[in-house]
Image: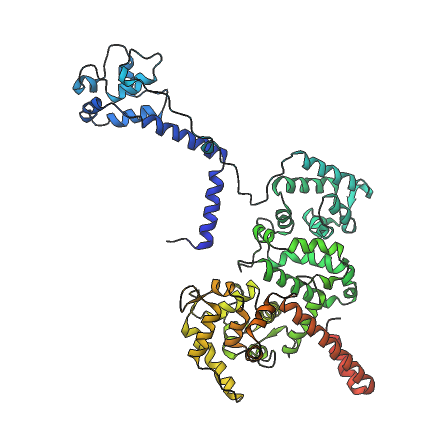
Length: 549
C-alpha cells in the first residue's frame, strides 16, 4: 500500500536521522570494507578451480572474507604447510590454489612465497565524505556549540530564586524567573505550570531547576521549549486546550486588557478567539495539532515577545487584538438569535445580507472545513468554527483562506476543481443575478475569464497550487459564491485589483477596523436614543449587557 504524503515525509525524516547516527556510519564503513575485500579480481587461470569446486566452497570463501580472523574449514585445512585442501586436490591445476586457499594465504602473516601475478596493493581508504555525514536533522533545535551555557542559565535561575522567601516563587514572581531563563516575560505562566506550581501555589528552586535543566538538555530552541512547556504528558504537539493557561495569564496581567478584569464572562470567548486565530495561522497541516516545526515557521513566538513591549494589545493584530475579537464576537452574536453559541445554516445565510450562496453554505456545514471536528451537534456551527469562516470570508488572499474555500468547492475531494464543480456553483450565481434584473455571463464565457485569470498549469484543471500562485484568488472565489463582492469587483479594473493585492494592511485588518468603527458608532447612536427615550434605554442596556466591553 502506498504511503500517504505526510507519512512518507515522516519516514524520510526518520531514515535520514538514522543515517546520520555515528553507529550507522561505522556499520556502513565496515560493510564497505568487507565488500571491497571480497570484490578483489581473481586471476583468469583460477576460474577452473572455482568451476569444479564442490557446492558450498564459494560460500565458505565468502565467509572467510566477511569474518577476518576466523578461517573457515577450507582455510584451516590449508593453513597447515604442505597440506592442500580437498577442493584443491580434486580439481585445481598444480601450483594454483583454490579461492579459499588464496583468501587464507592473503590473510595469514607472513604469507608464503606468492606468485608475482598475485601481488595486490592495499585498498585505498574511503573518501572523507563517506567517513562522516554531519547531523542535519534537529527536530528539537540545533544543540548549542558550548556546553557551559546550561550551567550558566541554571546559575542565573538560582540567583533569581535566592531573592524570594524560602527560595520559592509564586505566580507573581515568575516574571523575574522567566527573564532569568532568557525567555520572554509572558512565558511565566507556562514555566510556572510546567514546574507544578498550580498544585502547590508556588515552586521551589530545586523543583524548577530540575525541570529547566531537563528542558535545556532536550530542547535547544524557543519553539521546542514552548511546545514542551505547554504540551500534555506523552505528547509532542499542542492542541487548543494547551493554550488556555497561557492566554488566561495574558488576560489577567496584560495592561491592554485590564478592563476585562470585571467582565470575566468574556474571558473564555476572547481566549477561544485567540486560540482559533493561532491555529488558523500556525497549523498549516489542518491537523488540529501544532508541532515544533509549524511553530518554528510561524511568527507566533515573535508576537508573544511583543506582548511585553507593546502596552496596546490592539497593535498586535495577528493574534491578540481585542478589537478584532470584538468584531468577530459581535458578528456572531447578530447571527446567533437564540444566543446558545451555535448557529445553523439559516443563521449563517444571513451573514452580509445573504451575500453567500446557499450551495456554499451547505458545503460549509458538510464538514469539509471543520478540521476533524463534527460540523456541529444537530447541524450547527460553534463559535470556534465561525472564527475560521469570518476570517476566510473577509481575507481570501491568505494561504489558509485559499485552502478553506478550495476544500468547499472541491466536491469530490480529488484536489482538482473540475468544470462540473465550477458550473455547479455558478448556476446559483446566475439565478441570483437574474432575480436582481441583471444579465449574467454565460458559463462558457465566465469559465474562459477564470481560466485566463488563474492560468492553470494543466488546461481545464484548477489545483490548489494554481490558486495560491494566482494573485487574484479573491476574484475567482467571489465569482462563484459571493454575489455582493462579485458585483463590487466587476466595477473595478483588474490593474487596480493587482495593486490592492500588494497593499498593507491585509483585507482582514481593513475589514476589522471598518467594522469596529461602525459598531462603536452604532453603540453611541443607541445610547443617544436611549437618553431621549426611557423605553429605549432599557433595550439598549439589555443589549449592552450581552456585548463584550
